[in-house]
Length: 128
Image (tube, rainbow, N blue to C red; front, side, top):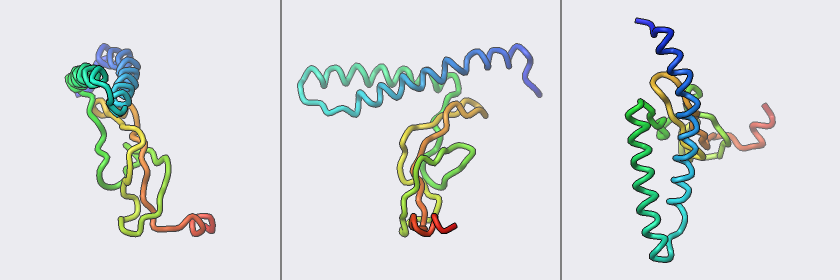
């Protein structure tokens, strides 16, 4: 069954808000990654973590889910920001996440930016 015009319109209006909220989530993650020295900073971190948890919960309620970042690179979900030579991994394996990605139902709100393994050296890639 297809979506009604009303449902499609509501989804179109909501998508920009959800995309902006992902940036808020990024900022909260950055705040939590900062080193905690003073007791006041630790208390602040508790509040930031509670805020992050509530925002994540609200996004999940709306159907926003993080994109899987383990395993092979998938161009439908991931954006390769860099490749690194790793002979110990299968080519195309996600090595590191630069920025988390999210889906909303069957829509990609933001592609996951990842570093992907390659078995070729940069010189070999340049020869192609």
